[in-house]
Image (cartoon, rainbow, N blue to C red; front, top):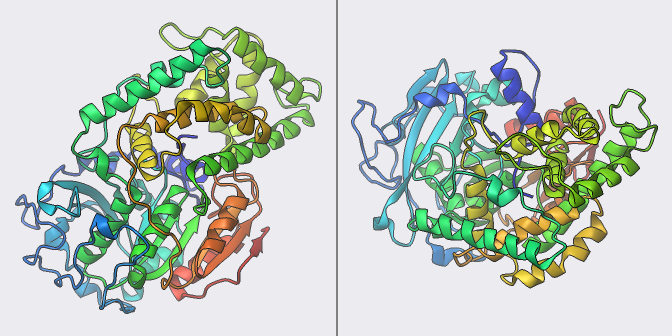
Length: 554
């Protein structure tokens, strides 16, 4: 399904906003904090003078890059090389800012800085224009213990990442905070990086459609919506839409590393950030100091199979939700111990006769209902809200379900949206659109219903949007991180979005993947318990990789 912020980071940002100490956590960053609102939209040097310096500009005060900018023609199985890639070890804090002139770092708050970096739109044609990436870095709390930079990404795809640095104190362990400059950025096309993908202003006409079409008219409505969405996207973003692939963003990561002046950097990615990380590590393995990925999708299979695995994951987590509700008398939707039966009745009723909501907003169709359910499956702290919303829907009130649906699509109080979903499709459909035949997608309804009887039909809508995507797919990258060293791969037993079976496959596809299994019903595992936190932090800081298949119950 389209992206939704992984739960624990949502909690971390919630706690950050309330100035409460809620402990560690991570998520796919949704709203930007007020701190990053002060960042400029253009790159500036240390004196405030606007510059258009590319990361490989030899006028930079940092060391000149020793590797040429990669090109799209190399976006295959061949890794890029960097002959200077040796572990620099702890860096003298007085010498750690070779990229100041390039990034133009400005202080946001104590120890937190914002900057920008220009990168080519098309790496095969650097003169065609540039993206200006928005970055935030959280400086190492203990300069004497500083190892280097830790690049971080919250996932999506489509989400900006700078919140991970702004809110770093509430997300990462002390040893990580002491040892690294945590560098986060909004990937090309997302967040405050410019230009950003912008396709449509209103989501309801596209995503409130019946996602389990039963008639030819319902199927045609989905096809028409998908074509319109894609055409609008291309019309508004003709220059950048072919160049927002994961491979392009991986090349941006290397540009960031070079601008930082570091032969090697470390990386910590969540959810889709796992895919981005292993793509970077496969293209630039000798520049990887250490890498952790949490909540990884199975990159050994194609887009359609990935979605089938994800549908099965959401279904399993929803089964757990229904079973938990049924045995709890205090669950608002327990229905005398038969929450599953009650939901099936409710879903069928919404499909036959959608429930009215607020004026100007969509009715609760079966598609709106399943989207609301998906939003609550990312973490158990959202389950009580879903319990109440389902109980209200039984009594003809769809406002609670609509609220969860709006949360999924990041709808703001004023009725506007960010660009997360638009960027999601732009990136995902460019990486692997799956089939381009709409009938093949509709023919898969039976397969999705088999692995996910309650929720599977809702995947058909997304698949049609990629089937109708008007931009040719980007060249594939073989993902194996060969030569990058150990990669710690974290997976949770009850992850709906990136099921453990998918994460295990990702670990097995890597040359040296070390799987850490966390017992939890949520998306991503860092922050769940001291076992996984220690395994991750010890590897990032001390390069002590855990044994494969480490199980973290507490």
